[in-house]
Amino acid sequence: MSQTKKTSSNIRSVPPAKTREEVLAQRRLDSRAEDSRNIKAALKGDQVSYRAILKKYHDQVYNLLYRMVHDKDEVEDLTQEAFIKAFNSLKNFNEEFAFSTWLYKIATNNCIDYIRKRKLQTFSIDKPLESKDGEYSFEIPDSTYEPDKTLIAGQRSKILEEAVNSLPEKYRQVILMRHTEDKDYQEIADELKLPLGTVKAHIFRARDILYRRLKKKIHQY
Image (tube, rainbow, N blue to C red; front, top):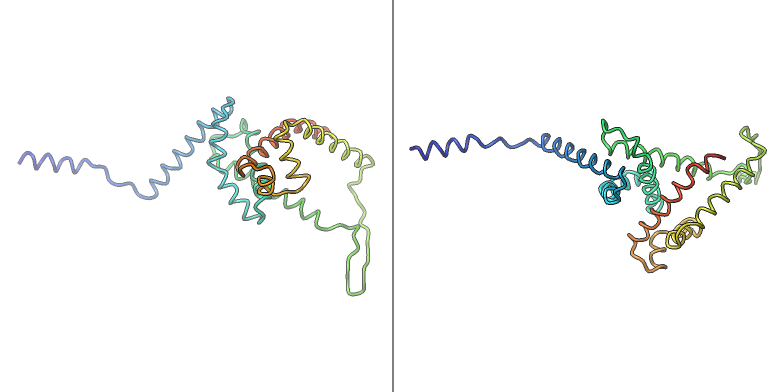
């Protein structure tokens, strides 16, 4: 009889199963706690924590941006740029908010800027337009014209070129192949006989170095 009571007591002491909502809420809390640990460690210079953040959120950011830009290599570029900007602004992150929300905002804003610039480049006012009556040209006054605009662009280009040339060879090579020769990631990997992941890592590192070196210099012009 006492054994039966003991068994019944044990059964009653088992906590009820968590609901789906409770499980998801706990996962979010665990995820935010993990992000907090990685961010604090990363800010102290721990590269393992930087890689952990990148690994955790890379595919999520990539998939988010792919909905906006349907070009895999361009999306990979934009994903890398988003992480570089986020990592360089990590000290400004407010832990009252979810890191993922903050990161996604950086990624989408950067992507929107890219789309705007690309759209501006798809139409030139200097190029004749075709119509049923033949070709015609027109002029639009440039209200933003500055006499030294060409000079400033040249100075920026020179600064960028010097920064690229100062990169370690393995980084300089891939960044030139990607942005000067306009090769996609797989083409670079095939030509250099490197794993695709290594190429992406080298390009990411090259961009990070350039971003840090050029952030203040470019803004002077």
